[in-house]
Amino acid sequence: MMPEKNISPQIPFRYRNFDSPTGVTRETAKKLAERLGVDETQVIHLALHELAVKILPQYEQDDGPLSAAQVRQIKKLAPSVKKKSVRSSLLEPENI
Image 1 (cartoon, rainbow, N blue to C red):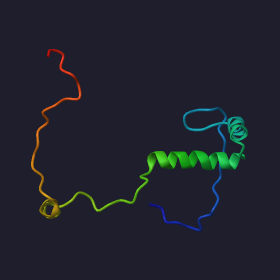
Image 2 (tube, rainbow, N blue to C red):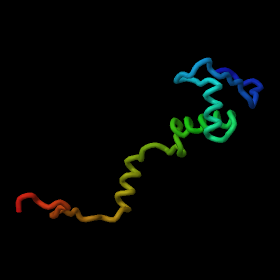
Image 3 (cartoon, rainbow, N blue to C red):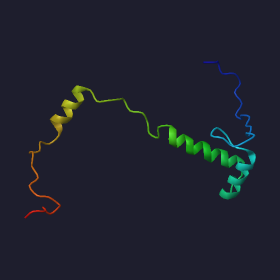
Image 4 (spheres, helix red, strand yellow):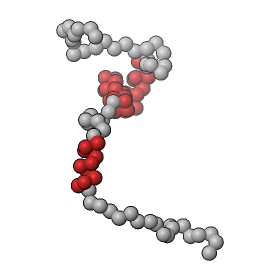
């Protein structure tokens, strides 16, 4: 990784010369802004937010899978339930 040097809070942004899967023209951004009732900068923020929600985890990372000891402890503390079988159906049998 490159060392961080005086990182500016702003980044340069260049529109594409034509719309593609990796970028849009300014004309497209203007149409989006007009349709959404916001300015072009807000369109960029909305697009980045939608991408972040789609790609990045939206929850705090946990400690991973439970250990065997944790599973045993849960089973020990959980109430025991007798196994039951289903003897009826929600659907009527065809041949009665």
